[in-house]
Image (cartoon, rainbow, N blue to C red):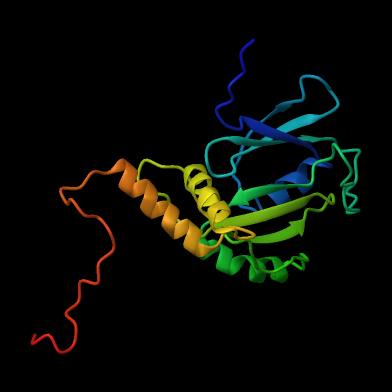
Length: 200
């Protein structure tokens, strides 16, 4: 028996209320272009809206004009979706709380997660969302997941409770050293600056 190897999230589909509520939230609040629409091929009473979350993949929503928005928080029991996180730049993240506040959207404000910054809020239908901004850029040719994998091992070896900035920095240095050769025989950290009293 062999695994079925995934290669990324293809799309996420949510049950929405009306067409306009969906467009107003996904494009009007989160800036996701509304790119495609057709009937829900499994239910002729619904429409199927497609939005681009920013990476060319898809967020899709089933809509029905007879449904009304209910902002009661979605259940968080076993088997239920807790939240979906979307990636945003640090510059956008800095503006996020203010822009949510301007619309009267309750939010957590900035939360430091050790390797990223997060902010949480609910949509008009009660689903919880996170907007996340990584603290780091991976070395060229590496992914965020590879940096986190290396940082995890550094954190565990140190006995730290969660990933810290220093673990990320050390992981980036480690991955760079592993992937890029150097003509230097000694690649350890150096002082590099003249010391006082050495005549220079």
